[in-house]
Image 1 (cartoon, rainbow, N blue to C red):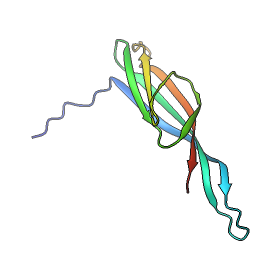
Image 2: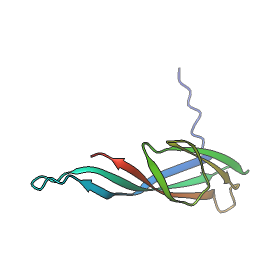
Image 3: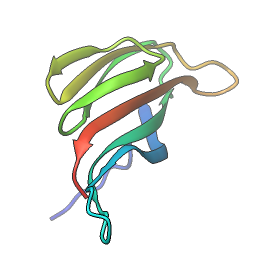
Image 4: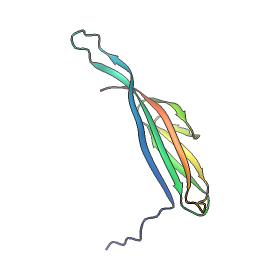
Length: 116
């Protein structure tokens, strides 16, 4: 037996990758067949967090970035939990008469020394 009581829309997070560019490309020195050996990847992630509740809330958001990386820019404070994990503590205001309270997260980071 399965009972569906509906979807909860208390807090909604919509996340998108806005940009992904290869930078600092390293190639072999072979003249007839130069190929990519390593490269860095610059990524821009944007998340929209909406609070539909009538009271303020605190959202703990965990992001995993694999491999070696460095943060270029981030508009919200975060803690680096370990080598591959970021932890955001986001304070969300209560919803208003106009609609849900919205907070935007934008982070730009580089993943380093990737192989094709």
